[in-house]
Length: 203
Image 1: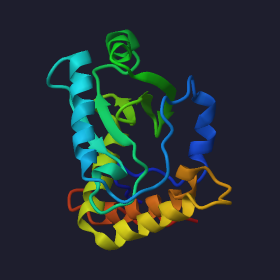
Image 2: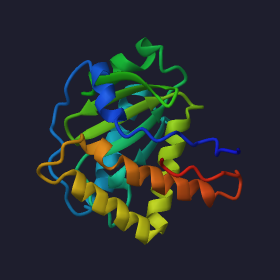
Image 3: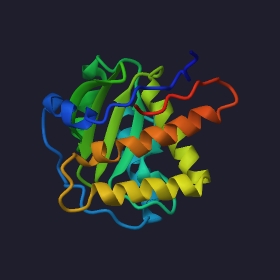
Image 4: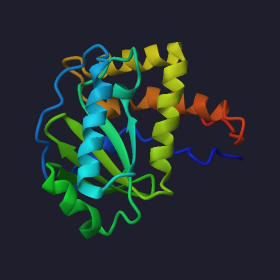
């Protein structure tokens, strides 16, 4: 069996499980889903300016998540991936980010990658901190690139997001849309000309 290097097994309850790793709460609540706002690109540039003010120019920061995909509904929260030399050396990067308004929310491992998640009040932001060789930010970039160029999967993901946010949904928002996310990744991996991948449908 050959698996794509970015493949991860399906885990429909991962978001609920990680809540035990929380160290604080976000400064601004996400709010409801809304149509894509072109101003989210400007919001990301504001986030980049804040991170550069803290850590210096040339930071490795990427706009990811639904606000990075035109024509996709999203909660008005900018997701950004920041790569630092050593995630575990928090003294090197966390105090400067806290000084410009970020707050640490999670210390955890996602798919084997050391991960720290911070929040910023304005613009409302999830800042994800990773090592340069982490797989998860590479997955994020591939997912965004795919949704930008595949309208049917973009619509399927939008439908899953709307269903996940509907009243009466018992799963956490991210877990409720996890099945569609996994299925999209399977198509991303199958279409990658650089890496073979034997399909791994959900059981």
